[in-house]
Image (cartoon, rainbow, N blue to C red; front, side, top):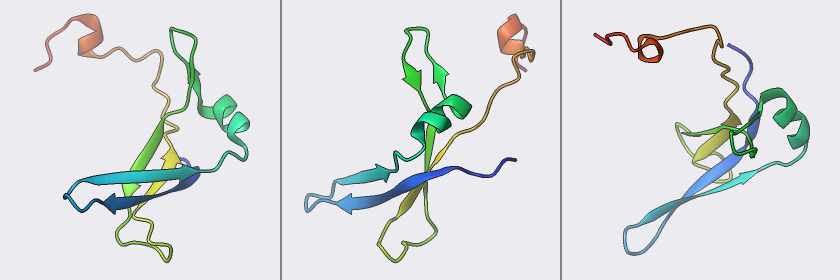
Amino acid sequence: MSEKIYMGNAKEVSFPNGGKKIDVMFKLDGLNQIWKDHGFTTEQGKKMIKLTVTRLKEPDKYNNTHTCYVDTFKPDPNYKSNLDSGGETF
């Protein structure tokens, strides 16, 4: 497994009515290189980077409750699953 590329942190915020939201802040420094290394282009021509947000075991000293990092997974283009071939899945 490759080393994680951390992009930033997030904080869960509660509303008085019981609702919740997660505010995410991530760094833009080096974003062009990260996109070149780990990004992709959709069929519609949009440049994308997949990010993963995970909950921290406990809030950090800034009360951040989540962390955000780049999903660097690249599927094997030669792999064909049963779903791709129309075969049985059980």
